[in-house]
Image 1 (cartoon, rainbow over the protein chains, first blue to last red):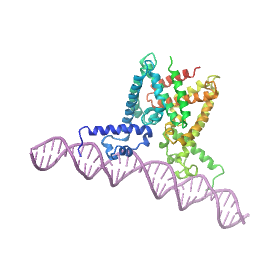
Image 2: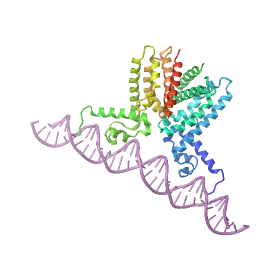
Image 3: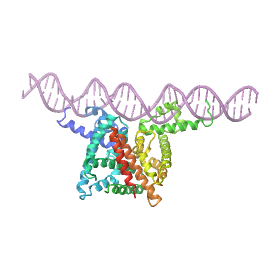
Length: 193
Length: 193
DNA sequence: TGTACATCAGTGAACGCGCGTTCACTGATGTAC
DNA sequence: TGTACATCAGTGAACGCGCGTTCACTGATGTAC
């Protein structure tokens, strides 16, 4: 059947948004195209009208995840007191809400290990997308030059991503809360001048 | 055929040691039992004389990896100047050698994301093994009580694990070196009193 | 205005593949008598 | 000392399964005339 003009574009976006969540919560191999399409009430065959391969979807989904994260980041910054933006960002990143929301959370914490195992070419693609988004928060990181701020932002993000992942391993609620508290204090102190 | 008394035990150890490397460099799904056994010049069927399942091997291999890491940690501590043990540990953990040696490196950096996706019961098993090993370095972390030191050690390790993973994503050698330098400085400052 | 044809997002059977796991079997050596 | 049997680490064919991907097909609507 023929579909309205924007129909295909909408379907593509639905696939990407859904994939972005599935990849984060289950990893590349845990997220299958069959399940993904079934969730959208479509069949697996149609997938290839939108993407050349699962790998191409993965890159698109990673970028989508970063876009979503950028949205949260902007919202946090807007609600933070002037000068307290970075503290608010750390607080949000290391919150129990973020720990619980794997599917909607930071794709670096959820996918960096898998990306690290890919080919240099593939890693380069992911890095370019990532670095653009990290620049967004660099403005609020202390540092003399723009470059210094961006570099520090990368160190901060990668460290907190590891911490977020570890928090997701911890089973006991109280232990997890304690670990997140310790971590927040650690990063708060680390960004002092 | 019948084999010497310790034969089975030796085979089991060979499987675990080899699996510990394969899991770290390729992840749970990238490491297959067929390839693993073939490397040891055995056939896949024999695997089940040693382990009930691939999952059981994964836990054993994770513990093996931590044991190996503990060996490196002790060696670093012995060669470090008195009072500079933690600095030496950070330097070693965030070294280019460690970044390049995924198969022989920290299993937290290589596998934490996958472990985070497992059941609470399974995560508990991994955590118990992990916490025992982290206690080993807690002695060199600043803190008033043993508990405070252990908690800080966990924050440090998880952060550096995220940083190590990010370093493995970076393609360009110079950028990677710069990122590791920035990170080392960051963690050095963070452990100052 | 009516008719024949083209389009193309989505369908679902099919393909090839590799995986984890099972199982009947092997055969050199240990043990029982 | 010799013989019959038990043991069990390792073998390799086989099983069931789910995956990513391909492909002939569908059919409502747009377009050409």
